[in-house]
Image (cartoon, rainbow, N blue to C red; front, side, top):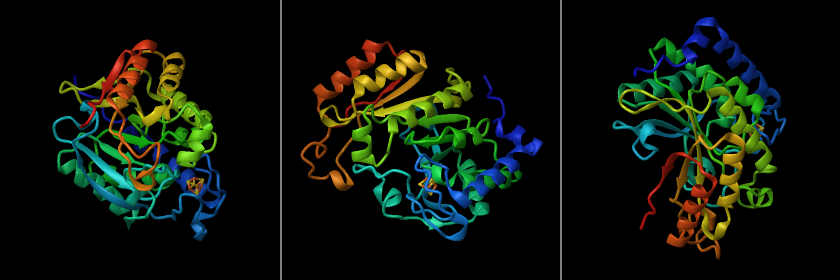
Length: 309
Ligand code: SF4
């Protein structure tokens, strides 16, 4: 099966893409792009919790072979890692980019060119990693990328701490949603990631993403995803991520057919090196418990990462 052209093409032709970019850009005057709702005027140089300005800042962009099989495929996913983050995960594996500000500020035209470079290198998709605070720039870059011939599915890779109002601006812009469901306990989410009321925001966001693209993960004849939703959950040591409850909520509220990616890749990084609880990888027994929880709630679709040595 050949995938239909990404839906953002139609939005671009109708002028809607430019209109949404203008709306998002205007939101920067009293920034409420994410649930922190800082209200700062980023256009006037003020910074909110994400410490981000106006022009997008990119930490790296490259072909990434280690996402889920229908995302990385045979040639890789065209990842663009944005600098800064709305969260403060103490164990962030990308902390130099997300927390320490590593990256380079670029124009929206250059951001569009990066998308086109990844397309020329053979990427299966454009994978926007931690783009929440740069939604205005992404929307503004897309028309330039389209003028240059961008035709890849757009993938949005997020902590899942999102506002549904912002996600609505990305309806029929994003083809593949790749959100986390990190926690089932607000106190833990606040302590470890700086996300207030994570569960309510995350769950509303997951529902909105599902509303936009539905349960089906649409694949082309090579098995590469062109549209859909994949919810990620990374198992943390000592049941900190409350995997059983997270998966139960997903199955009961999003449906057992939703695609879930269970991740075992946790290792202590950043502020969790030496931590009495999070200063180690998960054990085989912990991962077996997580797998059993997945089985128990009857989630039917997705992937289970191998437990690394
Ligand atoms: S995107 Fe940044 S400035 Fe805007 S509300 Fe979120 S944390 Fe605050």
